[in-house]
Image 1 (cartoon, rainbow, N blue to C red):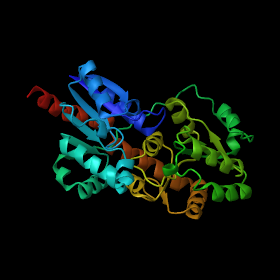
Image 2 (image 1 turned 45 degrees about the vertical axis):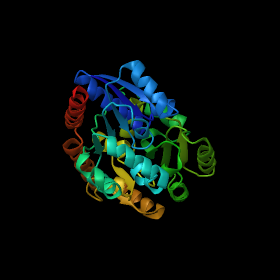
Image 3 (image 1 turned 135 degrees about the horizontal axis):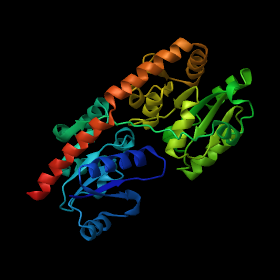
Image 4 (image 1 turned 45 degrees about the horizontal axis):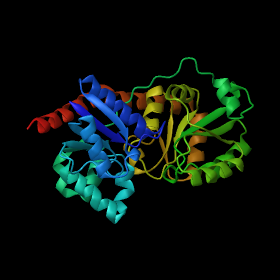
Length: 346
């Protein structure tokens, strides 16, 4: 089966990593999977031309609005994977809400990363509830064994010795929904009290206007650094040297960075929003904070309590390996795509 997989493929973003992983799952089942950036297509006719030229027999879209809106009306069966912002943000836009409902009417199936995401989708589009499946993201980390932590600290302009610093790593694309400035002022105050603590923000410059705001905010903040995106293996290796992975997003579908940190044995400090609370149980698999002051309190507790860190790491790793198996994810997508194959043969 020749499949089209549509997603927004900004480098080093969660969508791109997920799309590449799903493509691997489908190709492992013998399908020819053509991965294309939804941003490359201006309209449905552009997609229609591509489908015909490439001999596409079925399709899959990651993100109900950004990619899914391009698939209806082409005569090929397709499925949808919810992204996160489609359910958390786009549903509040009337025009997008209607467009996404039309996509779900024609889609053969839809995949949500968590039960909470499925509940939101069923509430918004009750007609689709019987075609929505829940499959958590599968995680398989692979740190770069040759990674140089001292070189990383030098790039971040951290001059203390490696064994003298505590680094909190915030991994995100620079866009408003990720809210990377949420903790900056409070963290800066903590750094002035305790100069060994640093927060390093790592991620691609997704929104140019907002990126300028972030850079200006970081320049004013003591103890906070900003670095560009990193290759996944290097990022995983850097995480293993950090005191914690931080997530400060306003909304999330399911943060791959949070799950990867758990898999690598790194504590997680995440903002208490539905997408994070779906995978982080407070004081069990990680720590959830509501505001910057609570973040600092919890971060101080984490670095001063080895028993707390040890327990969070052990339970977080066990949770990911139990509920976020990439083998289970592979089996689910291969099964769902077989249903598309049957549709295409009818």
